[in-house]
Length: 320
Image (tube, rainbow, N blue to C red; front, side, top):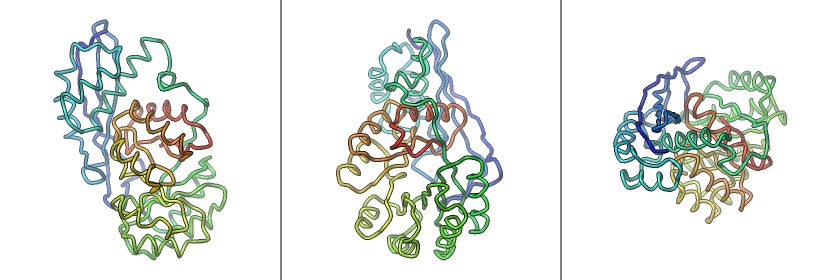
């Protein structure tokens, strides 16, 4: 069935519990973009993209809506039965802007699932599990307070914690890692996420002062080159997140051995169809990864969970 209309909506998502602080920025609320794709027979598919402000990545909410508007005119009238053709049409209308294309990609898959009467996870290859674990991400906060939150979240059932650091004195970061480990120990796996906020020297310093604590070091530095320079010099596994801006970046990281795993964002890579490629590439190299996104509401959450259900559980780092 052909596309009759594409509508775009703006939704403000307040941060529950107050400001969300990372190494690069602090956000109070998020500007999310919803897209509704309606076919000639009245069926509607929904997608979403929600950048974390204009600083976290080369993405922003106004840009998402402008990009979707740029592509929409060329998509109206297209047949929704071919995901590859729809992807080709988006590329013909606009170069780059994966995060905007992702919202449409999710909506197209929603339409396909409804029409066929199957979950989107089936369209992505089929679910391997009916239970998808999540993880909890802290803000950059005081060591004792972060440890208290970690205890509460482990009691609530979380088995993986992402502890944010960066953008402050290194002593605070080191103390936070130690306090969280002392508080929860092996009750939860820990990822220490600097969101590109450390120099290589700072990353090495934290690694050496926390050698006895098991964790994965997520996106410690700004560029892939900086992260690559850490290999063989740090004792902790290193995951990439923000540097995986497209499929080529993931392929480079895998082929060069830079990354021991990934924090993968659905919209950053261009949607669920692109994430399937990355999922399979990671499976070939036995690289663990998450299935999450920078932010978003229920649509993004559902998209992440459908994809996560298709990932081999032993290599899955959680949805968020």
